[in-house]
Image (cartoon, rainbow, N blue to C red; front, top):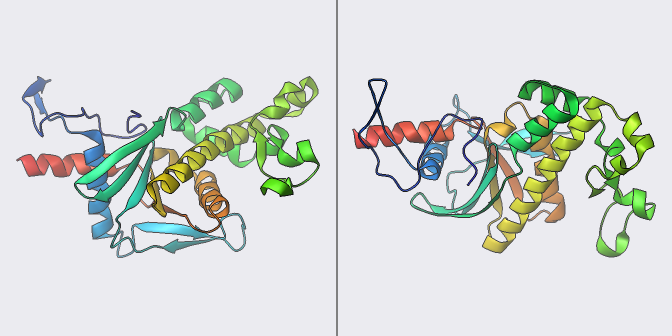
Length: 265
């Protein structure tokens, strides 16, 4: 299971709400990670965000001039697919506050993006990796459908701009020598985000859930990935799936742990 990486909650599955563990004159309480995540999401959404909705979505996510961040009412949230993106990814189908299952996950998450960026670009912080990605051009690194077919692959509904092979252009020595660190960072971010979006879409279809909520610290200051996820889910589902986001991204596990501690007091 992917931990709530880039986060604050170190938890142990299946343990009692509070156990007598001493460390440094402190009593440690072990709580289930995913229970805390869901509890934190539902609580924060119920109290709102400075008088506004905690939940939002992007309209026209790929159009810089027309893109709008709009509130979404999550008052009746069930069922929802909760995609928690930390170092890795856990995907949960949530049917009520006490009824959920972990559908699947992937080891390719925020930790993968940052780790690969450190290797490929020499960056030293997550913020630096995202800054590089914001100035890069992934099409110099990735092989697109149009690079193979000369345009759209209309028979199967594949647009020419779709990625056919992530990092596929890097098989060419000439193209390797022409790309920048920013291009590599952008391609890495697109690769990881596309993979997460693809898996989330398949899970939503399998579980017959049309609302997909993305959380986790991978999304912190990461508007590129949020807009890409919003567009990809809408495009590939022909408008049947909506990508939703929450203002507090990666803090829900910590909030849920606090609530669990208060409940056990």
